[in-house]
Image 1 (cartoon, one colour):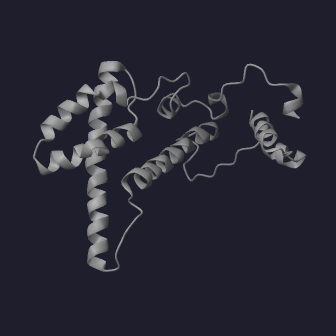
Image 2 (cartoon, one colour):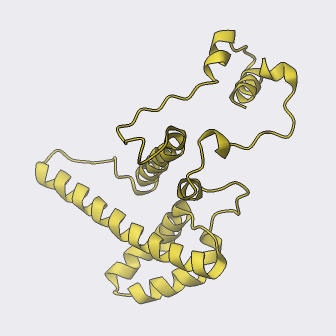
Image 3 (cartoon, helix red, strand yellow):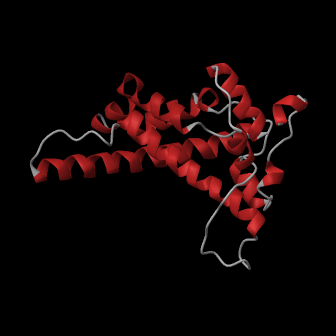
Length: 185
């Protein structure tokens, strides 16, 4: 599957992948200090996917909440900005958890962290709720818009489902329906 995708990508760019590069795509290397009694070697790759989930969380924080932008040089100002943004992240995470629980129990769907953050920032909903002490109204509005904040339905299992079921890393990939033999070489 990796070879197929690499060849497809190269074809779009008008390049050719080397044979050595394509051979290396057969391997995945993971290092861990977790004993084999806790996780089998085959499950480590699935667990490693959590790292990607963490990367996505930081990406959302940076792109939507601008936690990486600090203006000023005074230590006090920087500390205030960092603590303020971390408090904002905490409040937004709690609101996302609230939305996630509602979505799971009402619609059996997963919430999109990205969509919830955008919803909270749009029309300055979060700022207004905090300034005007209308947090209850915010929660009611969030509950009523919950379906629009859900992720699209998935055909494949989520990372959490793969981990809960201790699915082997390579077993978690679906084989393509048709891969031309020439693309596998």
